[in-house]
Length: 267
Length: 335
Image (cartoon, rainbow over all chains, first blue to last red; front, side):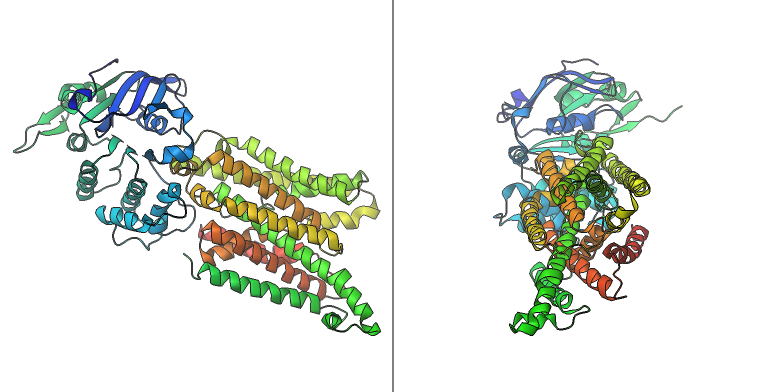
């Protein structure tokens, strides 16, 4: 694969550009991960970021969040280069759900979610209500008083998602949001994210069928510099995904919906 | 999880501090010195001198040293995200003691020793950060795992620096003239027997108040830093600026306490550890609570140290280590 790929969602009539990559190049340990990525993410669109392990999905999301520098090119958030934003202002524009969390000290679930309200200062009066609402939506309504260190990985991940959503930013950058979830909670998280109104979403995913359910657009990274970006119906196809993951992937017809992706068993 | 509302805990700690002061001023080989407060007769003169020139400066010094150590410990634990971090364990106290001792052997006065101690504390922290910079000022960690490993790396580096500082102190001990053995033991063990300078004690109390106030302005961002640099940055914290300030505060706190009382160990994590169980880990409540608890702990320990086997006086560091080591071990076992 090599860029530039298909065009983004400009023709779909979303409001302005939420975040934009201009010739963004990423390297890790001497390896070229992403070569000169040009990407316009329209406000209100939902992007799935797909690629094999180590393709640079997490690195790209960290770059878009302003937590890591590019190795070439520039990222523009709301039209302004990322390196001109300070931490406080960025916190009102975008949130990043990292892959993993640190809980070195005891803390309640509610206090953990409320850290998301830091940018709003001491005067924030809606914190508990917003936090409680997202916890309830993510089936964590029973958890607020529990110690985060005693949660299961799946529960802790949903608390992390509730934390990200409670920051109430227009742009959501989520690194593997459905990791550690059982099938029911996987569907729940995808539904909650798909139902967000007025948010722009970029999520790295390994579940192809979750990507189909969630995304209006997809960015495919092959980890050797190549990338393809475009509307979901043009990018999430059996042939492109087979090439991307170097595995035979079929789209199996289902009674309703757009079919399901599955890796063909050997033989 | 907090078991007490912070206001109530702080009120209780203030009462405990007053009680510890009263006890420290009232006990000792000269009885009834507190009566000198109300009795202005000729006979009260000696008692008044004991009170104002011996016990009060010593009590204030103990209070300040304990508070400063607890403040440094609290900040280092939050910065390293490790409840075992402490100025003594990380070698910052040892480095400060080496600096003060070098100044002493070079013939410097009190001011020179204070400068030497501060330099030693900064040099140790600088070495710590250079050796483990990945965890501190490097790129924001994207993976939780990397950050956790780096934090352990800093702690191990600190333990080695502490061993190095102890070796340097022993070297100076072996080379120093016999006349200075006594004061070198003071730096090694932590001792308040020489803390009779009222102006130094008052200055230390002032420094403690100032550094605590400075740390409190960073308490909210520090709460977020506890959950990782990346998470804090995403939520709006200027991670490097907060880190730089708090590293500076913990180095100054350690240096001041070492010039007052030598390398008193284990207060820096015992006090925050106990208070974390009482008021929780919100730094806005934990910082003042730990400072008060550390201050009370050293004040009580020193009162015991100078009265338990009177007329002999024990170095206060021996007592804090006797309390601190079992707490440290129980903490490690539970992690």
